[in-house]
Image (cartoon, rainbow, N blue to C red):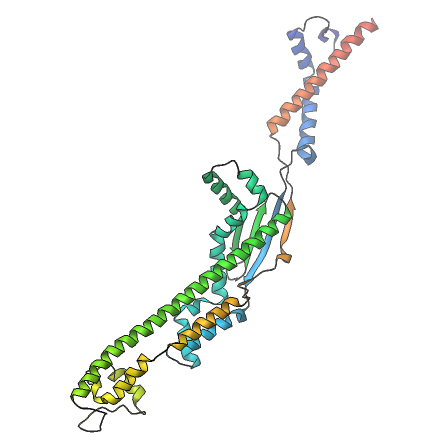
Length: 355
């Protein structure tokens, strides 16, 4: 650097001379800026860090099939009093029991989890979340809770798989993830159980009402037919003049054809009145047995889905925030410029001494 480019710092700063000094050191400034840019871009320790993120994954599988065999036994209590295995299977297919299988229960669990109702309830009680949303309005609190809930996902592993992966990216700590998942899954299972048993009870209550209504209709019809038989003085059916007999050999075959027909009185009021008495004294005990069985099932420790929190796979992701290139260049230019100015200042003091 020539003598004329030195700035005398004991006088007022000459802007023209200052610019000349900076311009003369432009190569030095450029090199320092380049070195600074490379160091900052390559080395993460000079970049600000994001808060730690934990990525966790938990496998959710269907429960074992034997968990639901007890429900199948409810088919033995159907109002037709049939103990034929094929009939029971078909009966179960046509009612709510067909919905209580290990695969369909898993699908119901997924639906229940993804409505986020139970998860929101758990998140609302989390101490850190409580603090972070305490100053917000109720609407904003709800929005924030749903933002947290959306960090959880439940997706099928493969198109043809019956397994699901429950995944979450959580900003706080690893232990918190396990607690939230444990509480949420338990609440979802409880809600799922309530839903299944309510629908089961409703289904059989409707079946019982249907049976009672059928019997009431039968009583009305049988009373009319008994009155006709009594007017005709038909005490019991006789094999005469083409009368239709309902003996033990053809009773089942004739039941559907003969019942509710206009000639049912031909059986005679003796048999018809016996049928009336039987219907009036019917206790519907099969439905009482169903109620007891359902109550018993409620007390069983049913594992609705299969999971193990000890197998929760959690990984820590610590990321650095990349600085904008323009900002790095500006800092580099400032450092380079300061270096050139300081170097010039030192020379301005040393040159006169040499004279």
